[in-house]
Image (cartoon, rainbow, N blue to C red; front, top):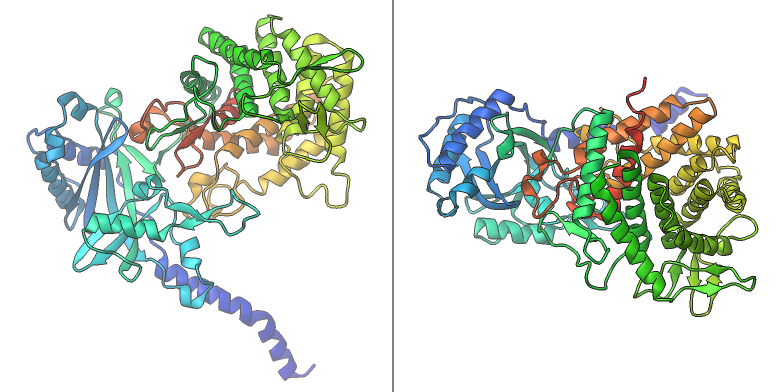
Length: 626
């Protein structure tokens, strides 16, 4: 090979990498905002003391914190979950800017009309601006629309506009509250995959804040803040709570912490259960808006049954008496639907079957009935009460009817035509039905259920018997829960191997501390890209599955330490995400114990709480063991 060809070959292989590395370094240096050197407990306490004196019209308490600040300190007054007042203090350092903000609180008209009890209970949130960097500017060098997709770090950065000598700032929590994130859906095939920001809405918000028209042509910048919030009244004078992406640090992981958190989740669900036995399906914590359980509308019967299953499971493990009546109220609703007679039928052999069908549904979903059986069986496990066994038996007969000879299940049923749908396949339902049959065997000892559950497990696991089956998986968390439930009547090690393989697959989506810059708060969650915040539900549902995988390994004498670590990481993450007294300052309505959709999505749905808190209470039984 000639020298010239050798040089050319080296350049071909190295120049592209060098180009992209250089581009990344340039973008990093231009656009990165250095994380703040955060105030310590004493400094945060001093800042709040100054601001509290201004809010309460007490004697002035000059701030003593001589830290640098990038021009501004913003103070938000939260009362009953709403940000009623926001003032901006300006100065060259924290002390000067905080003193300025305190004087503005002292004279603010909104503060003056607040009743004294409301002022005392109000919580002050402080955002110290610590750095700024350009927003956008890469469009000419990349893909059109790139700036809108990857504009800012959600919940960490705000946006500022400089217009005609005025600066308007939208704080990180204000962007989240106005739902400017997850505005773009790159693929219609994945409607839940959303990223980017809504620039049109941001322009309107900045225009309102500045009092001047703000457009994309304005000089926009990203701002980073050191954020903390005053503690609730009952916890003062403890130091203010440091926030990261609007969330306080989680309590240390322990069986006690998990049990307490699971019970708080149970209280949230009980508090959102109506007299008619239906749940408040969704609660928007930013606004307080809730779905109405007394009206027909968007409601999920599988999630109704799954949520009731968690409450029964919580009752079985904790024996808390306040859980029993709400569980029975939710079951009563299922019985009322059964009494409507829309789904009942008698098979040619005389077997009576029935299924869960909501008032507005025309097609029955296998998952609704399967999870109803799981919930009813769990209640009988907890109480020994066989009141609901006839109902569970009819539902289970339906599950057996919907199972094919190869162990798979039909997922939809037309009660008018009395015919299953043999084509449609939906997520979760086969695993849920297998779990239901395993639970029925547990409470009845009937061999038919054990045989059907074993066939279901064999079909679910061996479906992956193809050449890349051990490298990719679907959503199989119910499958692994069922794999543990069939023990000891089905001890096939293939079930354990499948679930351990699923665990390895999931760990590739679970970031560790230090893996992504500025995103250690995502450690333990499940996410397939660092560009969007993780959803909280998978940290619950997949941990339920991994708990079953770990226990199944113990039954076989092969406990998997990596699975155990995976469980601990996810539970530590979820403990921080749950609404606690420290984090309910911006919650409208009864939100304690709720599990928001993500670190920046404050919508709580009943299944978010169900999955996360089920994982918590199950792990609490062994997590402290060495």
